[in-house]
Length: 341
Image (cartoon, rainbow, N blue to C red; front, top):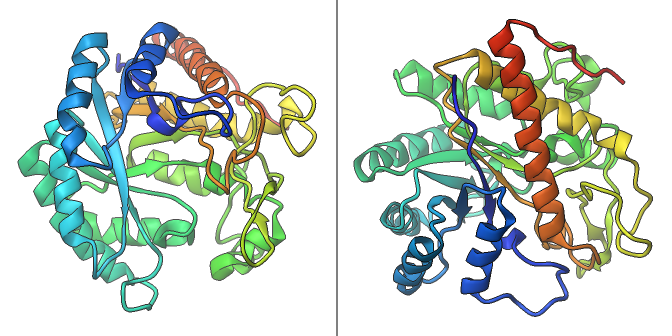
């Protein structure tokens, strides 16, 4: 039976985003004392901090299994090499790789450009022992979800595995969200049935990625269909944060700028169940780990009053409990039913 390894991204190790930053030693201690995490997820901003991270990783017996960064093609190729090697140095097995939607010269990056970058990046990763995984993410090339399988086809035609980071909050929040569906004009594909976001429908995009074995890494940050905008952050043009984060449990009054309903989390949870069922049933599953990623950014939890760390821990506990149920069902040969709305 495959294992499930759960970690936390460093940005999730704080309470309210208004809080004073927590020092690194305390962050490692919080992760250890939570009793629920198996690893730490971070690529340091400053390479000079590598020894500090390694020292604290050893002190608290919390490995740094994953990290990541974001890159602009035509500008950041050397930065990618440096970050990948830094990730490998501190023990990471995967480097979550975000590629910005636009090239350094301003044009939208093409599938061919992403493909070439991925092939070179994979070769580098295999040499240093830390593999790049391309993330599904807003403001990146993959925000047009249709392109993920298109690039994967190009990669697999060369006999190379396509490895991705599944952060399905970026998919779920666009369900029933007309404004967000206009980004990269996925609305017309949804209306025609060529692109299915709803995980309870056959042929949905997340299930396709899972069933094709693309998911090597996963970020777990809860979101709901037509997720509330983050009205506690305002961009210079007057628009609010896009809203790609939803509390995992009911926040206290005033901690979240919208109503909260546990039932609304079901589509997000169902994708996790689909991923874990695949991982339990397929010995060749490439899923290496899942990092909780509740964060304080403008499009996420900026200005919210709840403890981001507490919601991260609650999510991690749910992930482990869900895995125990699904793996037990797989062992017994009994498959539990999906939860339909």
